[in-house]
Length: 302
Ligand SMILES: NC(=O)c1ccc[n+]([C@@H]2O[C@H](COP(=O)([O-])OP(=O)(O)OC[C@H]3O[C@@H](n4cnc5c(N)ncnc54)[C@H](OP(=O)(O)O)[C@@H]3O)[C@@H](O)[C@H]2O)c1
Image 1: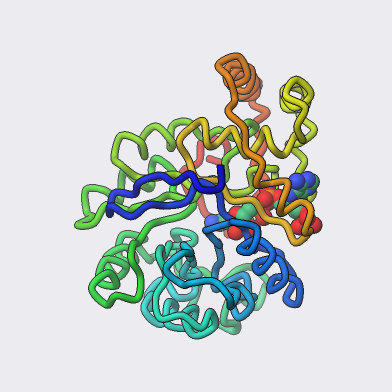
Image 2 (image 1 turned 90 degrees about the horizontal axis):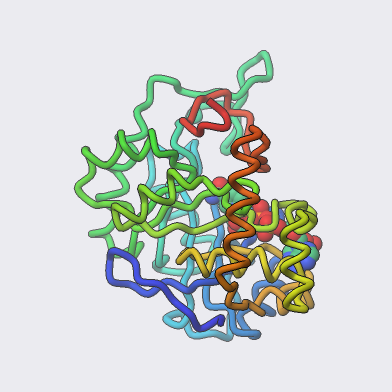
């Protein structure tokens, strides 16, 4: 299953499974990435903001065999090329395969911190007059530099995509969003499918500690197939035609997460019914939502 790929609107193949590196402590990332690549992972997902990019690409593999993703952080959304240059320098690479806008907002580039500038009252220092479409216009210019093979977005709601797409010369190749049966974000997935934007699912286990692994239908399907609940949650995305990113710094989990299975129609229905019932009851669970204090247009947060 780790050899499975999907096609991007750029013509590139993107692996179906990737290793996430958020919250992977410096010192552990290097070993985790090396272990993953040696085991057969072909995609590594990083970001300037994760502050561990100097460890996020392991030696010993051929660059062209690996799909490297990074993201411009919100303090660089008016300076995307500088953001990319900084990531490339840390990674020790001369190009990435995919460069994403991490979040559609601008934090003060001249604030009191490179990544998380704050105002004197402790709140985040955000430039609220900034239009996210202007960041995309800068992203489009990067393609000609050869420093990234493709550009895309992350954390884009349907509302934000509908603002972006009429203005875009290049349709984003990817929208990387939180996605699991407790937060299916079907309206975004459907719009992206219609527009040829590939979904990369993040926090597939529910992020830290993997809380979605305990959801009843997930446990039942895992028992039925004799696999771990994590396998069901990762396989869910392959069945939906999406790339999935699983983070682990634990060697046996990194290997376990490569065991993807074909979920049958009954499994897929059970997971959809679970999502539908959470939606109906207003119990959708979003695990990653930094306190920016901005309405990004997600129905569960608007
Ligand atoms: N674009 C964005 O804004 C954004 C936001 C969030 C995440 N992401 C990307 O998506 C990646 C994945 O999301 P995530 O890191 O939030 O969470 P995740 O992959 O859903 O879950 C990671 C957690 O699950 C544990 N875990 C991993 N495999 C397991 C297994 N087989 N059994 C039991 N526990 C397991 C990990 O522990 P150990 O590491 O201790 O093994 C860690 O605590 C990130 O690393 C990042 O690359 C992007």
